[in-house]
Length: 305
Length: 274
Image (cartoon, rainbow over all chains, first blue to last red; front, top):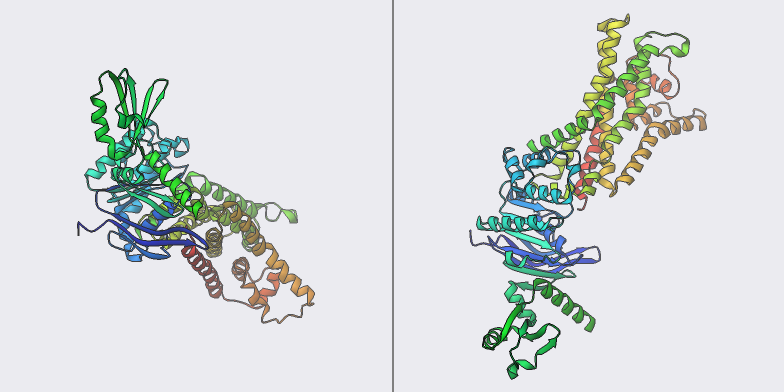
C-alpha cells in the first residue's frame, strides 16, 4: 500500500465545451515527493489541480488520488487528508483570523485547540484576534496556508503559495514545505516560475496549452533542454585552450564562455589549470531559463505546423 | 449533521455580528407595536384597536416586508462565496454540497425565525400588558401569525437560494431578487385583479381561490384572515374568504411552498460548475 502512488493521472483530458483545458496528461506522484507544476496563465495548471481535488471530473482518462477516484461520493473522506491553498482566496472579511481557522477546523473535523498553534507557526499569533479585513495580502496568504495545514494533510496542493510573501516569509515557507516532506507529506506546488524554488522541488512539470511540455528533475530537464552552461572568467590567464577559444566571447569585464552541459566537468578541469585566472563564475541554466526554453520550443513547433 | 450545524452556526453568528438580527428585530417590533397602537389613527383614534384588525393590518404589512428582508439576507449566499473564492475552498473540505446549502439556509432561517419571534412577540407582550385584550385571546392569533410569518421568511430565503445558485454574479442575483419580490408581492395580485375585472367577474368561482395558492404571500394572508373571518375585507381576500380553506391546509400549502424552492436550489447547486 505504501508503494502505491498518491496521485496518478493517466491520459487525462478535460474539455470545456469546445476548449480543451488539459490533454493527454500523465502524472505519477509518490509519497513524500514535492512536485512543481509550472505554466503560464491558461496552461491548464488550475484545471489539473481541480481534477486532483475532485472538484471536476475528467472528460476522459483516469484520475486516482490515494488510489480512489476523487469525484466519487465515497471519496469524500479522503478530503480530510488533503490540504488546499488556492490563488487569491479572500476569506470572510468580518471574521478574525482565529475564527476563520476554527470554522474550517470544524468542517474538517480537526480539534479547535490546534488552531492557535497553527497560527503561531505561520506567524499570525499577534493578528489572530483581528478581523481579516485589516490583513495584508501576505497575511491572508499565511492564513490560507494555516488553513491548508489543518489536520496534518498527506497531500498538499498549493496554488501560487508565495504570492505576496516577502523574501523572509518565502524562505520560511519553503522551510516548512521541507519539514512536511520529511514527515511524508506529498506536495504539489503550482506556479508561474518561482525564483529559488529549484532547491525545494524533486520534480518539475512544465505545462503549456493544456499539454505536458517537459517533466523531470531539474537535472533531467537541463539535459533534455541541452542549454549551455555559462562561465564568466576574469584575470590574466593568457590564451584559452584551443577547444574552448571558439566558444568564448570577450566583453568589458571579462570573458564569457558557453559550453554544453556534457562538457561541463572537462571544461571546469581545463579552466582550473589556467594560471592567472582570478575569478570564475559558473551559471547552470535556471528553472526560469528552462521554462522559457520549453515554452519557446513548443511555440516554435506549433508555428512550424 | 455536524457539518450542517457548523455552517448554520457560522451564518447565525454572522447575522448577529453584522447587525442583521438586530435590524430585523427593530424593524418588525416598531412595525408591530406601531400598528397595534396607532392602527386606528386613520379613523381618528389613538390607542389600541381590536386584536383582529391589528393582526390583519400587521399581516398585510408583513407580506411586503418579510419577503424583502429574506431576499436581501440570502440572495448572495452561494454566489457571494463563489465570488470571494471560498466556495471552491469549501468544496475541497469533507463537506457535500447539500450540507453546505442546507447549513446556510438553516442559519439564515434561524436569523429570520429569531427576529420574527422577538419583533412580533414584543408587540404581543405590549398588547397583553397595556390593552384590554386578555392574554388568553391574544396567544393563539399571535402564535398563528408569527408561525406563518416565519414560514413566509423561510420560503423567501429558499427562493433567494434558487436565485443565488443559478447566477454567476452577485449584482445579477440582487437584481433578480428584486424582480422576484415585485412579482410575488405586487404583480401577481394585480394580475389576478386584472383578470377579474377584465372578465367582469366571469371566472370560475371554484377555481379562483385556488389561484391564490400559487403565491405564498397570498397563502400567508389567507392564514391570517381565515382566523378572523368576521373582518371586513377588500380586494382579493374578500373573494377568497368565501371559499374557506382550513388553517391546516393553508399551512400545508406554505410547507409545500418551502419544499419546492429548497429542492430546486439543491438541484441547481449540484449542477453548478466550479
